[in-house]
Image (cartoon, rainbow, N blue to C red; front, top):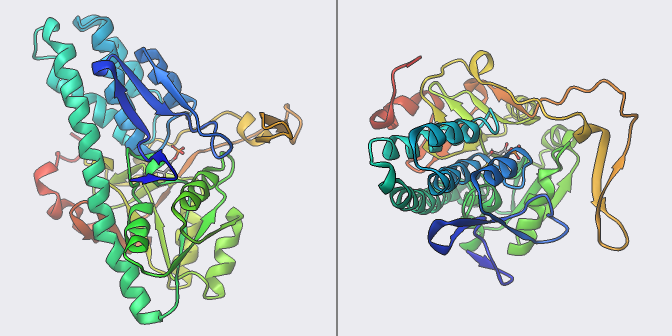
Length: 364
Ligand code: MRU
């Protein structure tokens, strides 16, 4: 996609894969800035500090991190150490370790001297695959919105949490892909955008939707339940960071409370994600999915721009306050109406049959 002169690619390789350019998401929604990563350590820093974020995109950034590691030193010891550091840059989204393992699985059987070239080819293929997968998610999910419009005959109100748009993938997004696809086909719709404290990824969603001209309204994280009670939400679509084989879903903190409110108000609750987000080794999400705890500074300050356009953080509570900052939560499959995947809309309990070719043994 391309809007307002900005190519909607969040990452691209430069100079034959010897460097990678990303959109630096810590500058958005205030400034659109790109940043060049020359070294695998830059990839780790970008993932950990959320210059790149969103499960599919951190996976692809991890793949390019392996490419840069193979450029620096393709011998086993160095490559394995770099891969380990990259895979552990953030713990919850399984796409990161999935991507690093896929890269290493292809590289390790080769001669070290052939690894860099092979790594560039595979990372390029995975990048392109992510684009096609997200487009397929959009195709699969758009009819859900169109069908609701046929029934309601007024703009469909969709609530989303965090940012699962093109910024969080290579292009199109996951939760936003069906919204973009339906909007492009003329289905009247409006998006309620959860602010998503503490990192305010909702502001990234609002920025994306504004670029595309999609009608939307930013709401405080706690507003969704009230809007659902008033009949102002027809559908919830969120992304995911890790989905277990029975369809439990880890996503940005606050997703679970939206799922509970949706359940109580008979609002369909859909999760859009590629199959690379499914962790076939896990069943019980609440017990088994690792939840990232992030720095207290994310809660004790807010970021914005001052009158000169400079991005600045303002402290809002004493730094010695005790803070808990879990970044994700888990929603049980019983609250998930369906998963919008590259293979269509799937009941959480049908994942293993629809993706039987990708299945790994439980616990294996
Ligand atoms: O902490 P973040 O911003 O990386 O969390 C992102 C999310 O929770 C997204 O909803 C999820 O990764 C899906 S992105 C297509």
